[in-house]
Length: 113
Length: 117
Image 1 (cartoon, rainbow over the protein chains, first blue to last red):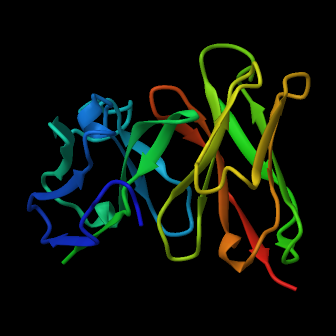
Image 2 (cartoon, rainbow over the protein chains, first blue to last red; image 1 turned 180 degrees about the vertical axis):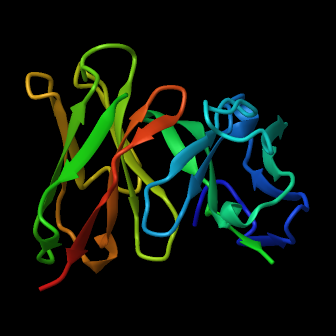
């Protein structure tokens, strides 16, 4: 079971806006740690999509955006395109007994109808 | 542009030790404030963080794996390694190495390790 909670799947028609939630707790997101998002296509490695809650690496289209509030955050895809069909993972950090740890959400499959 | 490449056996017998190496190119593993990480993904499942190591050798491991995991780093070869002992079928996964700073900004392509006799 993942530390961060994401919906297993979301879907939308081309051109629509979809959002993916990422819910944590006071030990991770709520402790002030940023949320990062990764996109993964089948058979390939995850790719950084959003870092620091709402920043896009070079080359990521501006139809992808992120936000954070309290113990949760979300990823929004506006103007959904067929090429956006993939799995999306959120990631943050948690302070543990042995130091700073990395935590992931369980992943959300985005389907373009 | 940093590149990471995992290498190691694709098949490990149950109860044995899984050993993987990640070779880094395009960046010095001992420069900067990067933490060199391992993440795995069982078939059809999500991502699981295994741990990370700093160039000084300091480490942090996932508590659920801590008793079986060890990581090391060889700055002269610009590579870092993962060792996972007493493996079972539940350890079958694609293993990724990745560079961690603010986030996991660069990933290797991943290598499938199957635990089976």
